[in-house]
Image (cartoon, rainbow, N blue to C red; front, side, top):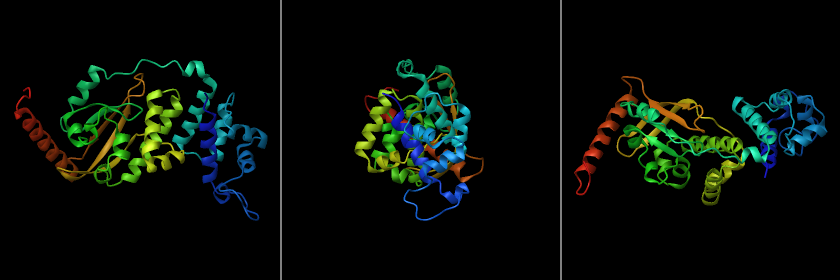
Length: 291
């Protein structure tokens, strides 16, 4: 098993997105392929057509970083796509025996748990590269309570398999696209992750939308931005989010939501906290529930 198919599909998908006009090339006659031809990419990258053809067939073994950067420039890759190309090349050069040595499954350190639990007015949770939610503070549990009904809780399964997700995320298409792009990045970094492979297989089988997005070979890395929610208890909420990788923790990441003081988002978080407290009180008051 190697990543040649992944490399080939990624390069072909990027080549198809660039028009000759965007690349500054003249157009003559009828074109039978979308985007650039292989020869045009080779010319822009400063390599031979034969060499580029080898690359697009999925063979990145021994390719220098300068060639990868030239290829990224020719294909007009953004920073995430360029990094993805370099990750694919490293995987191709690492060899199967090295990639198959799976590290111990990461666990959330107690110190990280204390940090997210200490954020009383900000939803915060820890996820892995498969988008499993491994830990969440009370506000995050209240915000994502529908996704957390699953066991294990996985945001990709919620987005594509739970019909409530299209109501919860007003910008569902963007959320779905970004989630698939993040999984694509995860696959490139660890093509031998069996649980990740099983998740992608499940979603491809059960969701036409996922299967279509997966075939586009787009990539995404969560950093920061704004996300809108329609919570069933508190209504519309718009929050800023920051995602921070935990170095040395096997792909774990902390995501924190916040809102500027005095904004509608801040008011919504207060209402969410009140609703969460009421839910906990109701649960504690039920017979047979430990207090």
